[in-house]
Amino acid sequence: MRETVITRDIVANPKSKYGDAPASTRHFITQRVTGAINIAFLLLLLFVVVRLAGEDRSEMVATIGNGWIGIPLALLLVVVTIHMRNGMRDILEDYFAGRIYRLYMMLNTLFCIAVAVLGVGSILKLVFWG
Amino acid sequence: MAVATLRLGQGSLAALEVSNRSKLRGARRQPEISMSVRSRPLSPHLQIYRWTITMTMSIVHRATGIANYAGSALLVIWLLAAAAGGTALDTANAVYGSWFGQIVLFGYTWSLVHHMLGGLRHFVWDFILGMEAGQREALAWGNLIASVVLTLLIWTLFVWVL
Image (cartoon, rainbow over all chains, first blue to last red; front, side, top):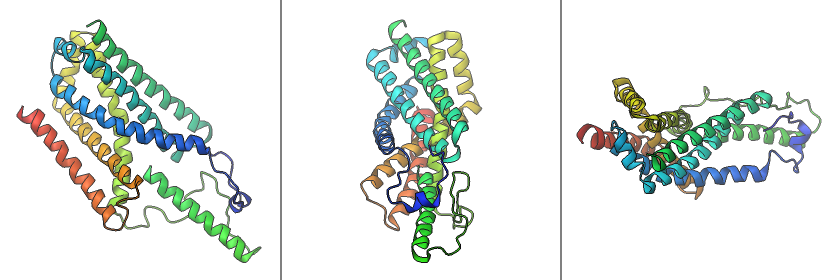
């Protein structure tokens, strides 16, 4: 995140570096890879939701509680939260700077961790304890 | 992300202009050029340009990304309710099955589909394909139309018929 004012000298200097190049490339590649994996997540989600929408608990346990469905769903949900956090970082970088950026970025991280932990925890509960 | 690119593009364009000027005209009086995050944009922004389908789909891609971000809570609440027990799940099902819940879930479906197709469009662009005039507009319109068609197809097949 840029916090120093860009002066004329910085702009004129061809050796100026803007931002963290390895981190930015890593961000770019992570977003593509997780995005591609998310297509699999959406297909599995479609299958699960179509099968279970409005159904009672025993049906939920029978489908999500099946490890061949539950475990991939849990893993893909973690990948989704990585994609979510990366994407929200893009937005926050555009509109905020400095301390307020870091505050929002921390909230972003906390929300994504909460989604991952609660989602995976619930799925594992259905898989291992019914 | 495309919105960000647009803005960065403008910023660096302005920077290029400034550096060119400083090369060409030396010490001639310059406009204020110290750029900070807050002082952008330096060039005309959205309200100046003709509204195009590509910029609209770029903005919608970001908007649907935010919607999906929030919508992930809906999925987690559903899973949590199922893990918590029968009564919690009944409550969740009643809320999600209500007319308001169904409207939200329909919108969430469209948002997910649109964002996925937008991502596929970005994959196409990553291979430097479909960037010519006409092609990019076709991709943008295709993204919009296909997202609506796919969403209606999913809901027709799995909700309204089955």
